[in-house]
Amino acid sequence: MSKVPVVFIVDDDLAFAESLCTVVATMGFESQSFDSPIEFLSHFSCGNPGVILLAERLPKMSGLSLLDRLNSGPVRPAVIFLTGTPDIQVALQAMRQGAIDYLQKGCSEAELYEAIQRGFAHDAANRAAYAQRQETAQRFAKLNQPEKEVLEHVLKGMVNKQIATLMGISRRTVEDRRARIVRKLGVESFAQLVALATVAGIQRESAPAAMKAS
Image (cartoon, rainbow, N blue to C red; front, side):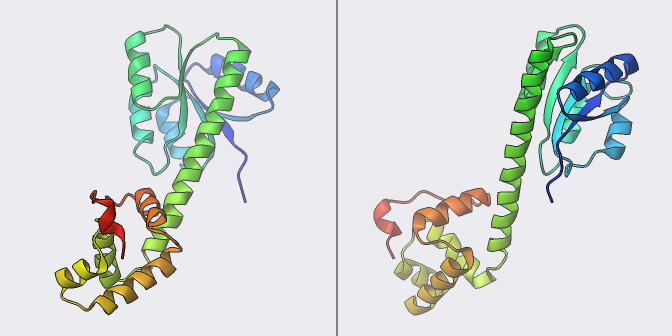
């Protein structure tokens, strides 16, 4: 069951955080506020969809440090930096670390609303990509070691005869293993196989197109 995305507010200015919760509620979004990075990390899970409104200055851990910590998880959350005093260097660093926006406190509700909507869309895309990687990894996990070895050579563009010679097995054995690879991975072409391997993070060495035929 899908969860409702939440606007997570991390700011030690309690009055500002409370007012922000009120504004977010009028936009029709659910919100949760935290007054420190430690409190936020103790409650937040990468399984929680939504967007994080993150203050730049926080006790014991800066907003940039918290962003770096969040980026180490399996799914990068959508983060919008909030600052009371604009700092172009901090803004650039936040964007380099993956923040999707950088807003000044006191920005218009329209700006905030648009940023939150972009955050929700960004978060949904990240989660969809993560789910696809997980599903793809499960497919590759079905391959046994001999099949993985054949797959490695196939992705290099080698033909069955070359693979058989290199591995010291018959061409028929290579064909059988390739057939099982295709069946287990659910692909119908070399292009689909390459695309699936890319999603799984498997590197492929380039090879002349003529070598890709079996």
